[in-house]
Length: 322
Image 1 (spheres, helix red, strand yellow):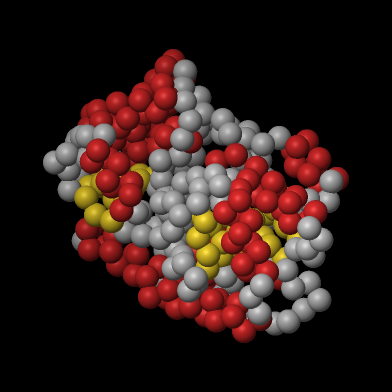
Image 2: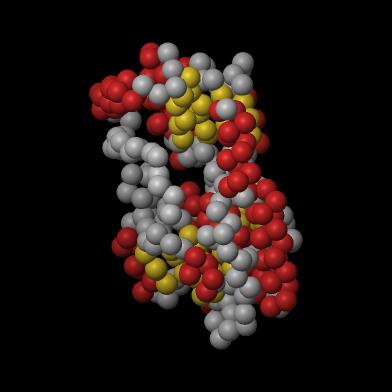
């Protein structure tokens, strides 16, 4: 057992709160904590930590590497919030020592919106995956041969409404396909779906709601396909986990999802927010035999080992740090 050499300090963040007064005090908290720790380098992830730690780093004259782990709901919804986020990013990240993107599309958007100008940058595909923990498990024939598993926050931006509509249609046609939702609502997210709505879907027998689990491996192993019709990701961890274990994937042709899947090789890609296309891909999978599914799973495992193994990702970070 390796002892951790890390110390943990908690700063509570309300991710959806845009109140200027509250966020000013959040910034002050960052200043206090970073000054107390006095690091040689700051590594930050996700929107608010990127913004406030970059500001704090500028004030305290500390080097900072900002990792862009997706653009979040702020880029998918309200135009005013999107514009405000862009302006904040422009101002706060202009003195970043390194911007790290998890996919090429986010880098192109940062260039388009003039957030990325003269800063150094790199593209590192995600945070990596422990391929020994998420070990390969060959799918065996079973009585429940058409189990589809969704893993993630149960919010609109993950394509949950399209997923429900697709399975409602498929079940009406008499399919034995079963949809399992593994996750929980996210009350801080503007696209949150209420627990009452989830229970309604379960009552109507469209889904089986599994709730939240710290360890998703046993659920992936029981599944035949992991499905995520998300609108956008940084680099979807649930898809990485599914591929590593050897399960085919159905997901959308969007940043952070398409990067994990080779269409018709490790899974199937569908159009974003397109229920009809999602139905076509589900029906395509239902027509595949066990050997075809196993082959897809093997291809997915190989892709993870070749590109997303955490050893590869950590080495890429260390190349910049050391």
